[in-house]
Length: 77
Image 1 (cartoon, rainbow, N blue to C red):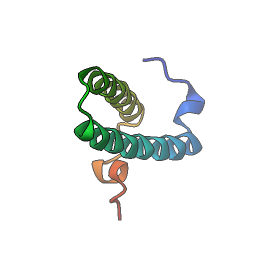
Image 2: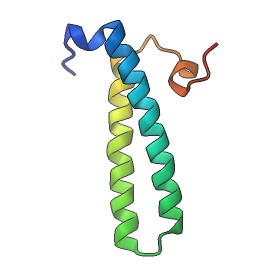
Image 3: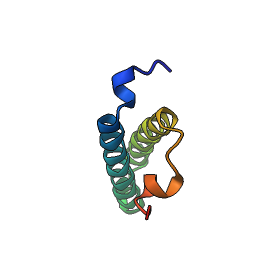
């Protein structure tokens, strides 16, 4: 992965953590929507959206390996 210096700045780190947390919330909402859905094609579409967001979350975590699990989840002291 090609990471630019400005991508690893403190401001970028803060923004990426916020984005990561928003992705977590969106994934949770999509999973709830999927549970209510009956149409298989729509369920597959929702699975694909979740998969793409999970890949983005993984990419962000790899950019900042020094961040602890608690901080990603918003449970840091």
